[in-house]
Length: 196
Image 1 (cartoon, rainbow, N blue to C red):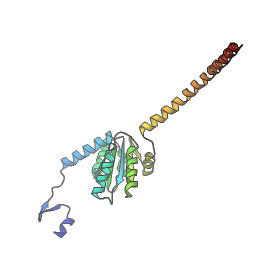
Image 2 (image 1 turned 30 degrees about the horizontal axis):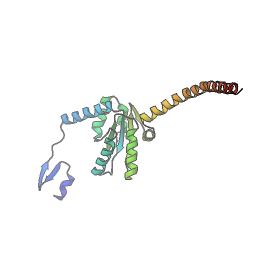
Image 3 (image 1 turned 60 degrees about the vertical axis):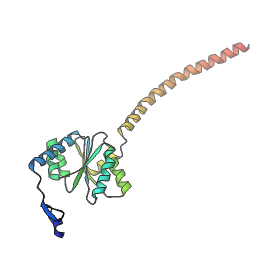
Image 4 (image 1 turned 30 degrees about the vertical axis):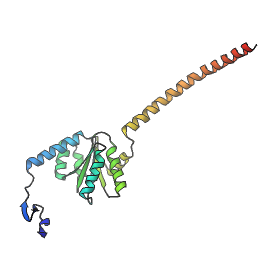
């Protein structure tokens, strides 16, 4: 029973050894289809090297990412390469080396990398980002880290609106100043006439 952990095709339950069936071609094709759809639908797909993490730590990371509408999935490289080719992103195949998990972000471009960075800082665990796919373009690990520094979509829209509103407010202020001065002059003249 000690040596059963060596054979990946064996499983031990209640002292008995069972041979696990290999994944069928249909199951693999279905997984490729699912990954292809996720790659097409996702605005961002970050590739991470999850080596050294325990299952409980990966589950904790998934829970953190789920709050930001990000899905974290451990994938087989061969299936992910087929999915990348089928989705129309052949350049992504070069990034799929070693054990890889993909974080699929569907809404905000920077939320996935920001949440992963926050999780790494909070847990002090090692989770390397090895690349990514952002709106159809392959990003290097450095570019993905820069993406984490971007503000959220709502913040960018608010900044843009503030920038657009500022000149209008200044123009209104400039146009009101002469009127206020004229009113002030007329009030002073009225007070002077009433006093006389």
